[in-house]
Length: 141
Figure 1 (cartoon, one colour):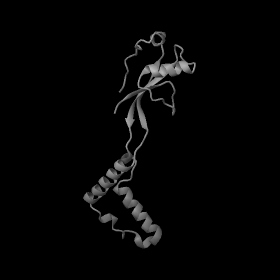
Figure 2 (spheres, helix red, strand yellow; figure 1 turned 60 degrees about the vertical axis):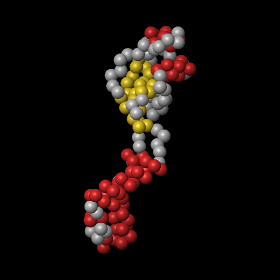
Figure 3 (cartoon, rainbow, N blue to C red; figure 1 turned 90 degrees about the vertical axis):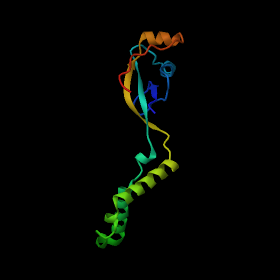
C-alpha cells in the first residue's frame, strides 16, 4: 500500500487527503491559501501488529527472567530455554505472528517519502476554477 496522501499540516498532525485539492481546500478554510506557503505529500506505509509483537526469543527471555525472579540463581542455565531448537523457535514465532495478525489491528500508518510542495499562484487559480491542480513531478515514492 503505497498510497500517496496530502496535508497542509505538518509534524504529528497529518491529514489523510488522497488529492492535493483537499489539502488546498483545507488551506483555504484556515486562511493559509497563499502562494509561497507549502503543503505536504508522502506515501503511507502500513504497519502490522507482528512488527511490534514479541517473537520466540523475546518470549524465551521473558520466561528465563520470570524464573530467575522467582527462583534466583538456581535457575541460571537450568530453564531449558537454551535447548529450544531454531525450528521450535521459528514455530513459536509463526504462532505468535499469526495470532497477532488475526486478533490485533492497527488503525494508523507511518508516512514515508515526505515532500514539501510550494503552493503557486497557478495552483491557486486552478483550484478556484475547479480545474486539475498542476503538480510538480514528485521526487520520491
